Image 1: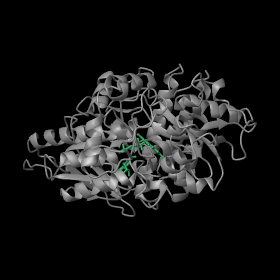
Image 2: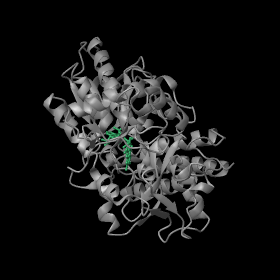
Image 3: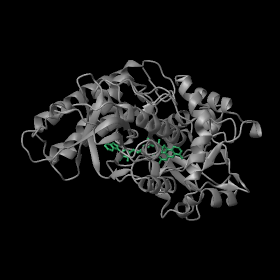
Image 4: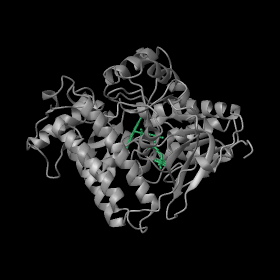
Length: 511
Ligand SMILES: Cc1cc2nc3c(=O)[nH]c(=O)nc-3n(C[C@H](O)[C@H](O)[C@H](O)COP(=O)(O)OP(=O)(O)OC[C@H]3O[C@@H](n4cnc5c(N)ncnc54)[C@H](O)[C@@H]3O)c2cc1C
């Protein structure tokens, strides 16, 4: 076969903020950029579901804040298990990330002619900026205020946008370099092969491995399994943040900035209990708050729906109405809502360097799928900022590397043979719900050695069950591959949680 350039220079897997930022930046270096997403590019993943908080120090020294202070807060929040170099880069680049979004027309809440800055737990200064989500059709998709501007920008720049494609395998050549990816479209049996000089993973987190989660339906931890399958290094997979406060009747998380503005948690006895768990009371970090609620609930002081009360009566009514308008239709005149912890954010993931490169040549990662910035726990507002900062870096670096790649004689022999053995829909459903039940019970907020060992064994059994059920060609390749990736990632999480014996950050071991 003749040596040729692959038709794609940069293949981006994932259409959330990290993927969109990567596409925008890569398109400045090369026109041959393709972005694919399991959902729709720009309206899938967790980005659109956010409360739009972005932490950044816009001006050094302003109001006593500094990049160094943002670094210190992020390291302290992460129990110093963060990669300090990545944290420094993240905090220093945060303001440029925000400016890039503003350049694309992303609207931020203002106070006079300045960006509105709020406080937030774990941040020692007011640096929590908010993208104005009022212009989108529903409070559930406020993040569209970010993503739709970027989607328009990448389309204007000629980026190839391919919706509803699930990447199921990364392809490597004989040297171990990534040379593309394989995937499926929904309801189609044939596999697609994307030949690419470089690949960026921007597949987001892990929430939907759990039964109670704040995450979008397509956030199932695929990127971790994909990277792991070709030998990329993963770290910190035991560190999963549970959002302390998901409104149970609406399945909507509330911004922890509310607590800085006067909201309080109360148990069913009406007690404000947080001071029993932390000297910071309701301003404790998310993991402390989540475990406190868990303890109140398991101690029998739970509300009717199995949570605790979020009491908003101490807040200034004008502030509540103006800055948290998404709550107005839910409150219906009330001042209390039931909240409980939900699987929310993955701090661990694919190891990257300061160029967003993974340990496998040709493979980059950005956004929630990557690790290093948050250590053992994440501060609010740092994830969206991370996605735009490292998405931008990954896009630029992957494109620069891609255009320098020599032509190769990449041939059909590298393609993955497609298995024709597929499990039936019934078997898939059973394994999927079994997996979520195990993760929710045994690999969740409070962990024990016995539970984690059981979980690992059960996940291994499920992997076998999936193969054993694959006797007839009657299921969908999409669903089979989805479950295979979920099982692989679940096993990685359970193993990491078993190996780390001490409690630290979001990882809490009873024994
Ligand atoms: C309810 C909620 C509120 C939040 N609020 C905030 C906030 O206010 N501030 C903050 O900083 N952070 C917040 N976060 C966290 C933040 O939303 C995420 O960390 C961030 O959006 C992740 O962006 P991403 O681009 O890495 O991934 P995502 O936006 O999750 O996008 C992942 C993309 O990958 C695609 N994908 C996944 N697997 C595959 C596959 N196998 N093949 C092809 N495509 C695939 C998906 O379809 C999707 O397009 C919140 C999270 C949630 C759930």
